[in-house]
Image (cartoon, rainbow, N blue to C red; front, side, top):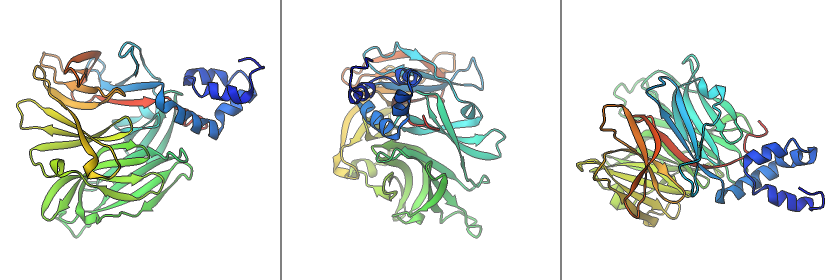
Length: 376
């Protein structure tokens, strides 16, 4: 950049550049490094990137390389899926055992499970764009029937990283586990501490909290099994990343009252998506529903149905920013590698992205480039 360009203009230009360029610019001058490393620039850069520099991160297990997870990042633009790269996997992530990918928020991924020698559990927050990560110990009771699940999100107001943990509290007097009790805790990276959250719904109405969660526009959503009268049904709860309130999100009757479907949640363009899987069909058929307004059942709108007569769907992994679905198909050949394809809802056409993984090992999520964790 020319010295004749006002510094304020230089800032605006740099906020539109990819992360790789900014990391190089940090070595050019102390003034640029100080700017790029500042909290205001990082927060402003993240807001700017919501409209550009989108990628898809794919995780899969390759039967030819047992015991080693594979990660591929694909640029999500008109070139998709040609521009692929293999991000550098940080050492803390390599030490996780039986990794669970919790989710993605503002360019950061949270991965979780047993760490190193299986003696404790750890969450690893990873920014693949800048190749940095932090590891956070997750207090956990390891012995069954105790259950711990976690969620991850970034507060949009402060860019503070937060983990939310739901734990089943086992009453030793309840030998039949008929009255489960749940508690919620939150960890903020800025404080480095865990704090108890207030559940704004009866904890004994929660039968099971699943690991199926997404972060959408400042809210973490969970799918959980709730109790209504004597019936156990799929329900959704949310945690506001700013106010840290735990509340229930009601589903429309067309989803909540069906008994012949399985529900899961995902996200598309910072909106909550509910996937209804009809398991009684000859082959799995998925309905894609989007919540247009937070917490309003009437705002759920059905976008389209995923029905592929010539192939069997194993799982819907996620969505491109265009709205196309990323799907893991069941491989009917002799190999145990399942292909990942893109489904175009307007035409029903599927196209292979050139990646296959061992069944149910595949994960895919849209993410934007971010500078978060640069100061860690």
